[in-house]
Image (cartoon, rainbow, N blue to C red; front, side, top):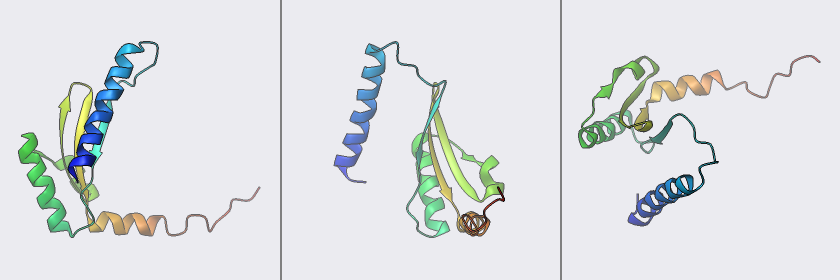
Length: 109
């Protein structure tokens, strides 16, 4: 991630917060999650990136995502969550298999 992208992202969040603060009639959701997904490197590299993020966030690896072949961590800031997730190769392969027929079958009308 370049410094420009990081700066633009942070400024966008600040702009959103300022807008919502000055426009109290605009509804807000009860919570929000900002996701980060590592690049499509191998599983070990993705897990290492998530482990590094967990150390920076002072958070644990979220093992409830393990059955889905995800390696994740997160930190809450009130109702705002920063979540970093590696979707491992087995999960991507399972998703590809499950969706491989999408659009090929049309229900009878």
